[in-house]
Image 1 (cartoon, helix red, strand yellow):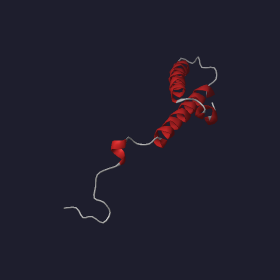
Image 2 (cartoon, one colour; image 1 turned 135 degrees about the vertical axis):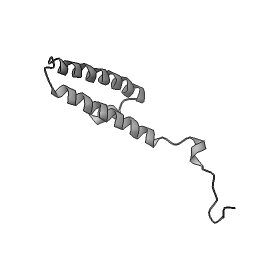
Image 3 (tube, helix red, strand yellow; image 1 turned 90 degrees about the vertical axis):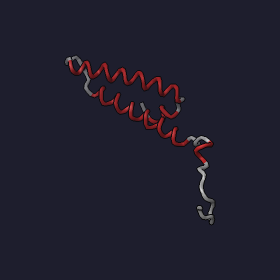
Image 4 (cartoon, helix red, strand yellow; image 1 turned 45 degrees about the horizontal axis):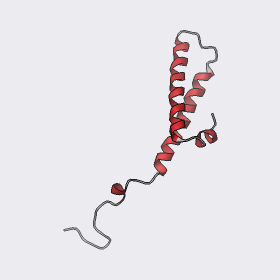
Amino acid sequence: MKAKEIREMSDEQIRQELQALERKVFDLRTQAETEELQVSSELGKARRDIARMRTILRQREGSRPAPAAAQAAPGPAAGEEQA
């Protein structure tokens, strides 16, 4: 899945797809252990897609404004001394 496609999805859609991919990775790892995995590159592709999705979610979280309580930290104003 391309990053552009992921960015067009909502956060909830990404989380649902992320859960499905994590399950797929589990299944692929199980197949690899039992030597039933036909296409070994599928495991790497799924892991890269998971990383892309997590990266995009993290970027979105970082671009959101902080809660009001955390924005204005109390402290001395410019030019004032602390007692």
